[in-house]
Structure formats: structure tokens, C-alpha cells
Amino acid sequence: MRAELERVLESPGFARNERLSRFLRFVVERHLEGRDAELKESVIAVEVFGRRPDFDSRLDPVVRTEAARLRARLNEYYLKQGNSVPLIIELPKGGYVPRFQEIKNEPLGTSPRQQALARNRTRLWLTVGLAGVILGLAAAAYLERRTAPIPIAVLPLENTSHDPANDYFADGLTDELIRNLSIIDGLAVRSRTSSFALKGRAHNIRDAARQLQAEYILEGSVLRAGPRLRIDIQLVRARDDLPVWSGRFDRESADVFAIQDEIALGIVNNLRLKLGHGRRRYETSIEAYDLYLRARALPNQRDRDEAVKAAAVYRQVIDKDPLFAPAYAGLAAAYAASSAQGFRHGDHAEELSEMRAAAEKAVRLDPLLAEAYNALAMAWVRDGQWAQAERSFRRAIDLNPRDSVARTDFTIWYLLPLGRIDEAIEEMRIAEMADPLSPNVQSASGWPLLYRGRYEEAFSHCRKAGAAECMARARLCEGRIDEAIGILSSNDDFKYLGYAYGRAGRREEAEKLAAAVAPNAFAQALTFAGLGDKDRTLEALDRVTGLGAARIGRALNSPEFALLSGDPRVKALRRKAGLPN
Image (cartoon, rainbow, N blue to C red; front, side, top):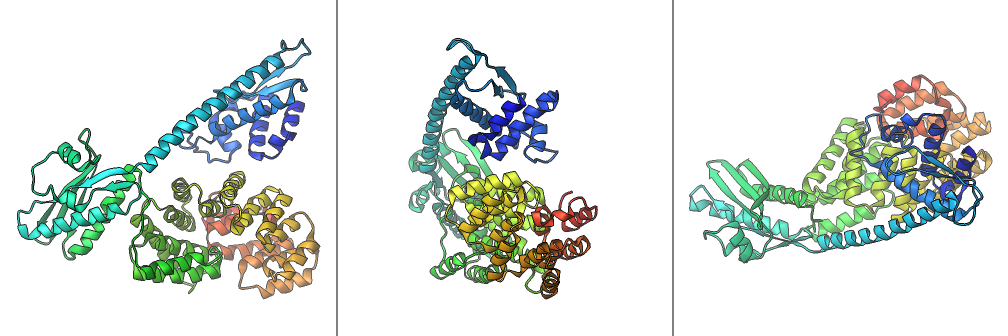
């Protein structure tokens, strides 16, 4: 049985997929050890896929999803093997205890092996055919749902203060709602002319919807009493008079036009979330949009110098348009990147506060903007709030699954610091499929492969990106130290050069570099690690903790700092940085 397990794991379909290989080895080994009671979803999630002990299968179906992939991969393997194996391994549906079927030399078509193959072929083709039908229907339904705009009408808000002098405010807010809804993709908003044709006329929701040819009606009232305003709004599905959403807004009426903007934005964003529809088409000035494009065009915005430049331009965009959500998201991400490598003025609290405020503002302005949640996730990481960070990263990816930037940030900022290496490899595989020519994606793809010990694959990705530091790290891990020193020297990369000198036994040169890079605590830590000096390595890393938990987490999980494994002082370092133990 163990020999068959090794044969399966050495086959191309499994050798190239460490995730499924680890899953199969785990269930087979536990079964052969008589530990079937441990082969349940909660244990597999923690032991195989690195989930936390409080794993909840209702929120994360990773085990069930991977089990289905494992069954399909085993079927594929045995269909190709014919009668050349002595037994087959199966993972029956509905459980995780493997089953073995011994194959004997029997007349053609009568052996259990041949019968099992026939069953597997039938199951496989039925599964493929049924999956094709289901996917086709789902795709058609999805496309219909996404491409058929939702007809919606805003009825003129009722002025319930009984003072005709306040009609202008109710009408102005109605106009703002129509205008804001009209710039949401996926909504077909009836015009102001059509809506206001019903003003002052008695009607019920179904009659109004029929006249305006709308599926949803937004109606409400405005009450103005002295300096106070109260706005009540509800969205009704016309076919059954079902209230889908309602909201109440109480405000001081000092600046009625600002209040109109604020309430309209709040209502529209709530409707978008409720209806599950709508990417916003931003209306901004040509000058603000041109500046935003200039900021986006700056390369390597996860690098400190470029991030600082980008932040300055994003602030200019916000000065010209304080409601432009993507600029806040860009600013928060730039703050996060720069603060992870040092601070502008030495005021940690101020910069971190600005970062959080920008990220939260981006989400408030546009709760369906993927990059807003990505920026918020990075802010959560800087605060050491890991659960909130993961939720925000996953929300960003859900909103835009093809966004390679979100998957890359999720990998570098979250998965690697927490040691979830195999998940990081999978995220970067998906990111590469979406964005195969991106140097940033190629370089980031090399990182988790380095951590997993797949050095040649890591080198290949880093070479595609032209990332000298990453290439040198792969060579250092392989023990090809002179080659790594050549790469680093030719690119003036002193951060890892000190580490390489230490590994090469060139102690004097390493010490000189450590002194030269003294302001950079991380570069010093690397050099001391290369020299094998645990005490100075830990002291330097302690000075890095101010740059955030992600930086320390990546370091402690990286091959360069393997000398610290098992050192009891690491636990205190993790606690100080905000990393879970």
C-alpha cells in the first residue's frame, strides 16, 4: 500500500501539485497507522491546509473542495495506468478514509481493477458532462443577471414638514439620488422627468412601477424641523410590495447641499450592497482623473521610494475631488508600503492613523471597490488585526477575482508572515494566470517557492521578473554562494550581500557591510544571520518590529533566518511585533 502511494505521488499529476500530494499522503498514512478517527474535516483543515484551530467548515470549504480535486486526480491517474498496478487507492465520497482495491490477473473485463476502471470512466465522463451542463447554465444565468440592468425608479421624496418652502430640499435630494444611481453599472434608472411626472399624485407602488416600467421603487420622505432634518427611505420590490431595504438619516441642516451629497451616497451604497450590483462609474474632473492616472502609472508602488511619490500624487487627487474613492485606496496602500520600510518623519502614530483613515474612507465612499478592501486589509495587518485583515483581503478578491495585485498583497502581507506557504503558492499561481506578464507577480511568485524549498522554480520566476535579489536568494538557498555574490555585487544589493559574505566565510567584509548599513536594521539582521550570530540577529530584528508584523513574520519564516528556529526568544519577538504564536 505504501509502495502504491509513492508510485501515485511520483506521477506527473501529483508531483507538480504539492497541495494534493500532502493531502493524499496524510489520509493514507493515518489510515495505515489505524488512526481513521482523525480523518475528519476539522483535523485535515488544520494539519494539511494550515488552518487555525478554530476552523469553521461552514465558512471555509477548503477540505471538501480539495477532496473533490483529489478524487478527480486519482481517477485521472488510474485511467491512464490500465492494468499496470497491483492495487488502486480511492477516496470514497462522503468521507476522508481511503480505500484500497487489490488487482488480480483475471480474464479481461472481469477483474475488480477492470470493473473499477469502468466505473471510474463512467463516473468521470458523467461528472464532466454534468459539470459542463451545470457550468453552462450557471454561466448563462450569471451573464443574464450581470448584463440585464435592474430597472429602478426614484419617486419624488415627500416633504412632510408641510412647509412648501422646504420642497426644494426634498426635490434636490431626489435629483441627487437619481444622479448617483445613474452612474452605477447594472442599474437602469428612470429619468427625472418620468419620476417627477408622479409628484403630488396619489399612487401605490405597483401602479407607479407599472407606469415607470421599474422592478424596484425607491421612495421616502423628508421632515425639516428647525435645524434638524430627518430623511426616511425604503426600497420596495414592486411585484410583491416587499421592502428590500430601509434607512433613516438624522442630520443638522447647517449645510443642506453637503447633507444631500452625504445622504445620497449613503443610500446608493446601501442599495448597491443589497442588490449585489454595480461598479461605480466615477464622475470627476479631467484634472483629478489625469493626476490619478499619473499616480497609478508609477511603478513598484510596494517599494518605499515609489510609494512615497505615489502618495503625494494621490493626496493631490483628493484635494481636487474629496469623493474619489480609488484615490483614497491608492493613498492607503502607499502609506502601508512605505511604513513597512520606515516612516516619513519618524511619527509612526500619525502615518498609521492617516493610513487607516484613508482605507476606511475608501470603503465608505465605495463599498464595492476591490482596491478599497485591499488597502483596508493592509492597514489591518499593520495593526496586527489578522482576522479582520483576512476578511478584507478575501472581500477584495471576491469583488475582483482577476486582480493580481490583491492576490499578491494577500500573499506577501498575510500568508507568508503567518507561515501559510502552500496557500501562498496557490494564490500566486492564480495571480500568474490572470497577469502572466507582470514582473511584480513573477517576483512575488518566487517568494513562497523559496520558503517551501523549491529553489529552482523560485529562480525561474525571479529571472522572468529580472529580480536580482530574488534570484540571488534562490542561489544562496541552493548553496551556490559565489554565484549569488556575483548577482548581488553587480546590482549593488547590499542588503543580502552582507548575508552572502557571512555564508561564504568572508567575515571581515560582512562586518564592514553590517556597519555600513547600520541605519537599516533588517539589512544588519540579515548580515548577522549569515554570520551565524543569533544574539545580534535577534537584537537587530527587535529594532525591525516597528515596521510591522508582516515584515517580522516574513523574516522569521524565511530560509535566511532558519538559524533562529527553536530559539525561545523568538516567541517574545513575535509577541512584540503583533504576530500570533
